[in-house]
Length: 149
Image (tube, rainbow, N blue to C red; front, top):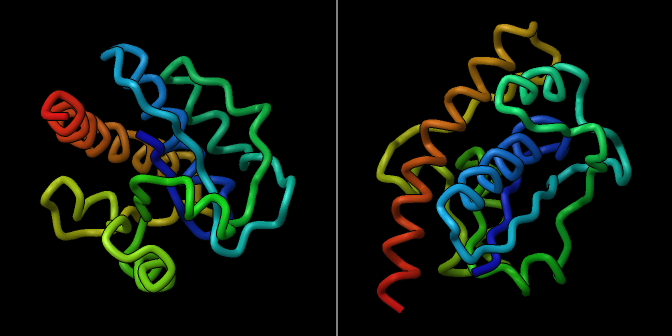
């Protein structure tokens, strides 16, 4: 299963989500391929400094991350596209009907993942912690999906 995490600039939320989910997937031995992209990404931008620091708590190194913009190839090869907000979903849904969900919607919650960009370290850590909780639920659902195939 190919999973794509999408946010605005691909320097904070989606790289954090992708790296956290990769960690969870490895721990659970899930057969998934994970990527991240941004709707308005500046190609090649590094992860934000605070995102890099926030991921250290989880033993994740984001130093090698480089932002990439969403494109038709990424959309086409993804089985599941998980966005950080309803606005991201609205922009992508026409290009990928039936496979775009907000991350929270996918696990049965009605909320967005707030953007910590430009905020202090506490906001980044809160975002990372929130992502981890939601991604654990996401992994449960994907595990069930993969087992039923």
